[in-house]
Image: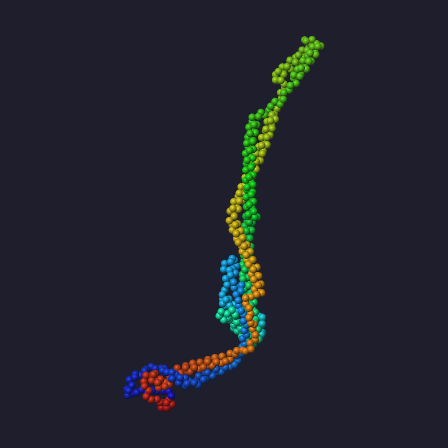
Length: 499
């Protein structure tokens, strides 16, 4: 029964003042329950379709099987720090739990589902998606089908470990138990292959990449040195610098010797010139002493004539005249006929002066040439001294790069050997392979319960909405709370409507 009209007391028995402007009834818990009961058919009308649809959906859900595999993780060389250069921090290792977490993160790599899908095939794991991809007319549809398959693989894959445990549990859920076991084993195999490639190739490729970069820088440094030498016309900087030093010493020694010889020659020439100036150019070559012999012969001839002629005879007088003249001649020429000519000593000394002058001129020319050569050598040495800092910088850079390339090449060989060892032995051991599960799990009951809860909640919300939007007063207590007046009677709604 509902109260659609309330009578107010006229006798003044109640001192309560009436409330004005009330548009909503004031409901207590009992009134609310009563109103919901009155809206039961409406809530049932909402509940049944939702619940039936949920049951239908739950009945269509397939049973799924989960296959399990377990692997054990131990601390390997890949988790021990090995610096690329030097030994700082060498041997530092991660904690066991950190290693397990790192390995779990590797299992979730998006690379592994792609490899698993490529290994087993889309048609075996998800036949409906394979059929959809086969019927697709565009590449975009085929890509979407493959993306859906990868998403399904990632969604149904789970890997985890208990706290403090080195064992990782890997499982995959599928509606086919055989496919679930096969995919789980494929995940394990691809994970092992992926981690080996990741742990070994990452460091190896890093070292190889750095070596290639340093080799490029080394080649650039060598080209810079080559261009530097060509620009300055140097074949070998150090060899030329040493050769210039030796050449400078040799030319300096030779120049000192030439200067000493030149001063000696100048002194010798000065002495010879002084001697030449004091020496006569002409001398008496010889004295003709045959006059005495002629005089003796004439005297003998006179004695012979005196034996035949008289003393006053003409032949005797003539011979005496000849004797007298010859005697006078001999007396006037100091004992003979003298001949004058060039002084041989003067000629010899003059020749020596000419030779010494020629030698001196040659020494002076040689000294000038040596001085010129020494200047060129010193100029070249100054140029090399100016270029030395730049050349040393280029050589230092080249030496550092050569050392780095050598160290990285050795480290690369070490990493290559480690990669081969990692391929042969790993720190992750498969404890248990996956087997096809015999018992599956169905979501039918959970889905049915979920649909029941959802349908009940929806119906309750509809009932509450209906109850709270009504303006009628459900009970006497509700009317008194709402109007603030006492209720002294009630009239059924159908009688009120007839009245």
